[in-house]
Amino acid sequence: MRFEIRGENRLGITRDVVNVLTDQKLDLRAFEVTTHYIYADIPAIRPERFPLLAHALKRIPGISDIREIDRLPSERRRAQLHATLAALGDPVIAVDANGQIAQANPAAQTITGKSEKDLRDQDISFILNDPSIEDLRHSKFHLPEREVILGGQTYLLQVEPIGHVDDGSDVDDATPWGGVMVFHRAARLGRVITALQDRSHTEFDDIIGESRAMTRVKSQARRLAAIDAPLLILGETGTGKELFARASHRASTRIDQPFLALNCAAMPEGLAESELFGYAAGAFTSARRGGKPGLLELADGGTLFLDEIGELTPYLQAKLLRVLQDGRFRRVGGTDEIGVDVRIISATNRDLEAMSHDGTFREDLYFRLNVLGITLPPLRDRIEDINDLARFFIDRTAQQTERATPYLANDALAWLTHHTWPGNVRELENTLFRAVALLDGDVLSARDLNDAAIGTAPRPHVTTATPQTLTSGIGATFASNAHGTAVYGTAQHSDIITDALAAPDFAAGMTMIEREMLARLYPDYPSSRKLAERLGVSHTSIANKLRKYGIGS
Image (tube, rainbow, N blue to C red; front, side, top):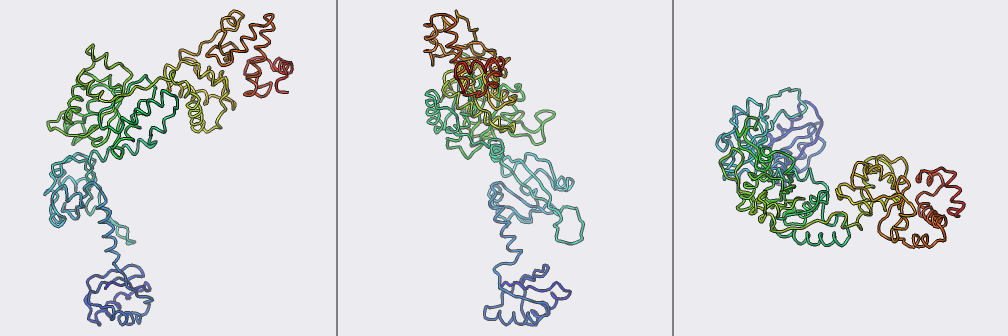
């Protein structure tokens, strides 16, 4: 039976309790003392005898309460520790200051093929050659991470010291009592990296776009995502290839496994090779001791996204082909083959088929990568999505710059829809970010967008409003850019141009166009001052014209 005694914190109270237990001829199996509490485990006590013992103990001065408990504090802590270690998927081994194994969790027992009883009190060198106990002692059980071999498998070893426990005593001993050795699998590190880097959890429903082109490509990508085979994503720069790659991973059976990405054009061949395949110990002068796993190992069981795959050198193309063929490779400077189970999703804005024909890209690798494929539409083919995309980017930029979300004026939306967007969604995002960040007022106009787009090309087609251009612009939409010139695009209100052309003279036609222009702009700039600033003319002139046409009265 286990029980708890609560009492005063006075000198000699523990001795008095022990004397009572001795007088009762009771054999103690465990006895623990903390401030105000004494715990005992006495197997010989039967339930019917406990009230008599409790009565005897309460006669001790300072004892206030005695009650039965299911576990001693140390037993409870031990059970919690075992449960915590058992929940860890990585092997964990605790050693004392002499390098002898004190505890090993179930994962460590499984990988070593030994029970905890067989491992306990064994020297760590019994299962691990490196690091030695001398290395551990010299570093005070605080080594930098290194690769080791445990049970025939490669792990990244982390060692942390077990130091003095703050129990309220005045003992100041900084010497470690031992250390905890945690063995991390590369794939588990990959899942941690994924969790830290990909907090958005992008899915297909999160990708903005309800146009026919986007609806079709999202439906196709959603079907292909569930097929566990290489996927090639084609599309111009800035069309969202990585978004689709992440969404494809989230919609696949590998959703709980790592998703890692590498831009093949962002680094030279040697660095790209070590990032992708890792390197062995001593592979080169500055190599980390014990080597380093590459993205293929870190993504084991999950998905590896290779962006700009068309930029891979012929040498790396050959090494990647081997991985796609049989899932095996060698690290840089290594001799052992490593097997992985990784789904490759690649993307490029180049014509890989043409490159394979002219010999700049391996034809066999192209066929291996293009088992499944989708082509993302450029922004000019999904004009219907610009409104939703623009409002999303404006809201996000306003949050990032800590300002109120500006209103997108109609002329600004017209400007956006008539831009050719060679950089696609990325160019749209950058243009809106600059425009919102530099905006002084609360209305985002075409002038603001035009100023933000200076230096980007090509911009919307702009032509000066003259009688000749008006005559040639039948069926075109009239808008105004930042400099007060006429912009022509898709016909939405062709009636005003037709009516102006039918006017008896030039002045009458221009008056009709002027009235229509002011009437359309006024809802977005509902004052003569705002409208005058928008059009770059005097406030008095605009006020007179508004009165003349009865606008805003």
